[in-house]
Amino acid sequence: MASDMTGEQMQAKITAARREAEGLKDKIKRRKDELADTSRTNSLYLSALPSSFPIQLYPRMISPLDPSSSS
Image 1 (cartoon, rainbow, N blue to C red):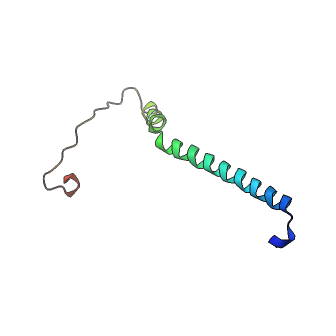
Image 2 (cartoon, one colour):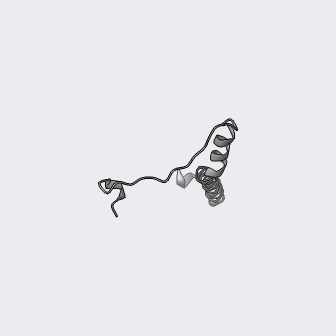
Image 3 (cartoon, rainbow, N blue to C red):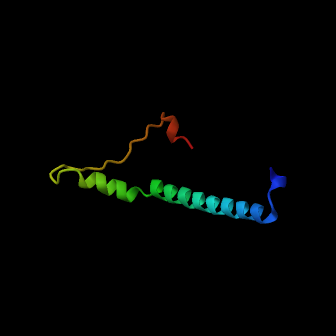
């Protein structure tokens, strides 16, 4: 099949493949950025709560026996 293509046709296929690869890279980058952006998700979650809902944050208590706390 490759021998049936002219140099011009082969170059056109390479150019199209490069464009497609760039498009996929951009799509992956946008998706990665969306997943990394937690500010929008957290603000939407908090804005859905009623204003009378008490929000209190507590520090995480780590037990000396907790294997996830070992370094």
